Length: 341
Image 1: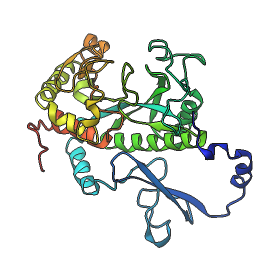
Image 2 (image 1 turned 135 degrees about the horizontal axis):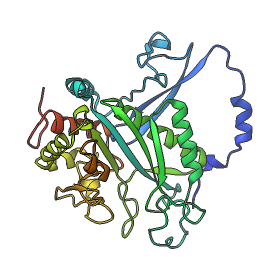
Image 3 (image 1 turned 60 degrees about the vertical axis):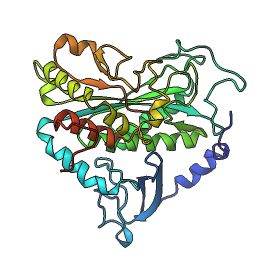
Image 4 (image 1 turned 90 degrees about the vertical axis):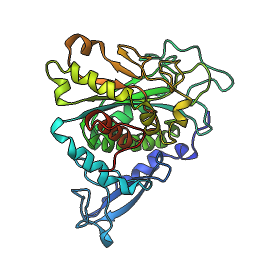
């Protein structure tokens, strides 16, 4: 498996420089989503003091806004800059309902040659089955990266809440949330950026491709859990079922919103096999991993809680996913196009 050339550089030599005193200056990294809607870019500048807000103009040179402090995350996009005010406005419209999101980000660790980490150079590992939440060198490929990423996210203030090995070997998942409203997108994008940086140090690549390996292997999604104050209270199952009914009538709209290519990426993943629903059909059920919408068994028993939309792809834009759910479930929009408010 090909490793990046930078991974072979001496980290001991680098550490000598990292320990040099920096005086009163600080380095601030600015992160943004690039024009593809999937990639992340960054650059670093010197500031006179640590920025305390997203704006940060009082702390930076030449009036250029820099990266926020960990307690206030926000990732700008080069592709959808005009949608920021709309997205924020929509979340403000429903803030009294206290919408909570939790997103389960699946990803695959690859070599720089695109070959899955730990897989035989000529052939395939054993069939799926023992790898999900697996333990042992023959079942878990790349746990060092997973652990490093988890701790880096906690240090950065990202609301990461768990991680596990996934069904396909070299595939993993981390969960972010619960986050209220627009914060979901903020925290997931930052978690993705940190993962890319951790993988860079280890000389490998984190892929969010929804179907990185064709054939009898699981794809990668970003299952999205959603609830409101009403859903979480006694008798909340009724509100959950009403939202699912609205989602059922707007399936094609959500499929377009759930991957950056308007559904083309998800078409490779949502086949009705490998724990997915069919992209052309809407379905819902209790404890059904093959449905578009899954109601957890505990929610069915307690008659309150949340539901899980299993359709979003691993490379989805979390801002687009959460906005689509707000529009349909809470603003009761219908049809194939979003309403202009």
